[in-house]
Length: 149
Figure 1 (cartoon, rainbow, N blue to C red):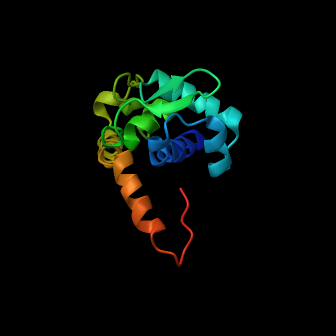
Figure 2: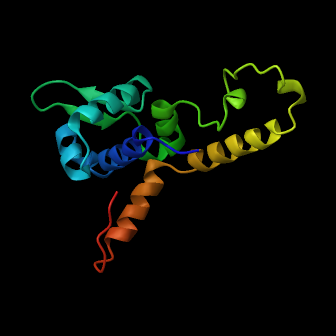
C-alpha cells in the first residue's frame, strides 16, 4: 500500500499545526510556507480534517486553524483515515463496507489482507501527534543536522 500526498501532507500539516499550537490559530498560508505545500491543496485537506473533527476553523482577518483536541488524543491513523479513507490493502477487507466478492467465503488469501490491514491500523493508531512532536523536539535539539517535518 502506498499513501497519496493527501495522507503524507496531511500528517505534516497537522504536525506543523501541533508544533505551533501555542501561538493560537494558525493560517494555512503559514503552514504552506513552512512545509512547501500549496495553500489551495491545504484548504482541501483541512476541509476534510475539519469534517472529521480533528481541527476547528476560526474565521476572520486573524483566522486560521487550531487542533480540536489535545495532540495526545489525535492519532496518525485518524488523520490518514480522514484523508485517505480505509487503510485496508484490498477492498474486500475494508472495515465498515467491504466489497462483495463471490469468492470471499472460500478465499484463503483474505487472511493475509486482514492481517495487513490490522497491522497497519495498529501502528498508525498507536502514534499520536504528541509522539511526533516529541520526536521533532529531540531531533531539532541536535544542531549537527537540519530536521524536517
